[in-house]
Amino acid sequence: MDQLKRVIGMPLDQQVALVDTLPVGGGLRRPPGSFELDRISGYRYNEQYLLMYGIDVKRKHNAFLPTLSAYGRYGANAQGNDLSRSYDNWYDFAAVGLKVNVPVFSGLRRVSQIKQSELTLASAKEQQRSNVMGWELDYRNADTRLKASLANVENDQENLRLAERVMTITEQQYRQGTALFTDLLNADYQLKEARNNYTSSLLQHYLAIIDMNKAKGTLLDFANSL
Image 1: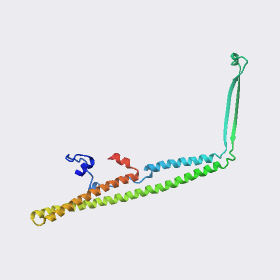
Image 2 (image 1 turned 90 degrees about the vertical axis):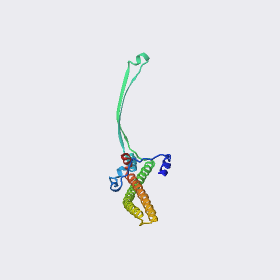
Image 3 (image 1 turned 45 degrees about the vertical axis):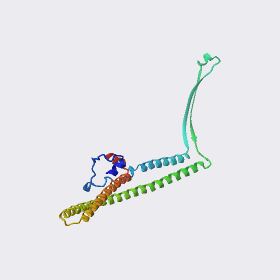
Image 4 (image 1 turned 60 degrees about the horizontal axis):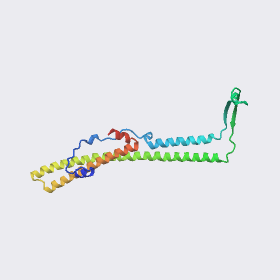
């Protein structure tokens, strides 16, 4: 307790009152939900980049296609030798037409641009595939650690119960004079060690839960639920 006070900067002579409790025993369980790539923010960002790279490739391919456009013009001119009377004589004009643009040769510049964009898109897809494998591996590792931590908690909890029973029996035997003082000290030591192991396994279990939510992309939801 004094070490805890020192870490959080609390005066050592001040009393500490813990108001929260940890779920133990049957209260421990795996976080709900399964692994979904759409929950991973990095996956969503990379998918947007892939979309933009694909659009860039299509845009450069389409630059080779002929284009047909229509145009129209309409205007009017005022003329005259006298400025004050020039605005009385207006001569309008109009023109409409079609314009065809056929790309013929660009010095291989467009071909190089297309190849570069296609290489960029292929590289991004390969990187995304590698990232997906990495995210799936992180989830599997987190799942393994979570299962192991839960088993450790259950095992250490049983060891703690056993140490408590041994301590109770040893205390009774010591009062009755059938156990030595060293037996009592040894039982007390074993009980403290069992408590430390159980507390440590609980901590590792909750860290594993955090890792699991991080691997699933639900860390923010988990934090908001606390």
